[in-house]
Length: 171
Image 1: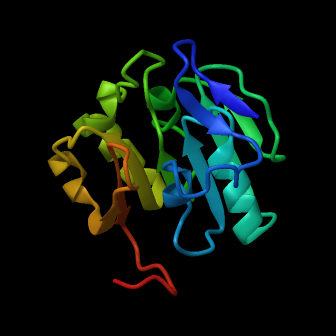
Image 2: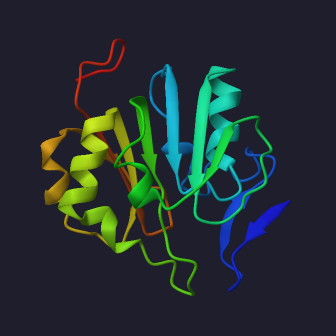
């Protein structure tokens, strides 16, 4: 099953292994077993499904401005991600996967906003940020840069940052 946006773009797939290496989803899975995860931009939940496959029954909270189907037994919150991070609890890992539902799948502009990044920095030990079209990630420098992946044949770049030492994660 594929979850398409209103313009026919592929947002998510079920089962989550359908296009394992031909989309960005596997690169959004934390490189260590987190205590809990916040997914900003939940959509169809492909990333949550992959986290479940790899790490089992950890607490996953998904936030999306649209109502989403809960296929992976997560805590789903229908909310604006920009507002949610201002007052939410602490998470071991925060995944930022925020795009407008448009023809060109534009990133939400606030992902590169100083206030948003400061709010994520307050709540996350580790952050994974899905981007498009080579954005200037300078604003994310308040985190410690861990690395970057670019899935083959797509324009996404996924950045990895930390604020704390993560046991088992290479520096």
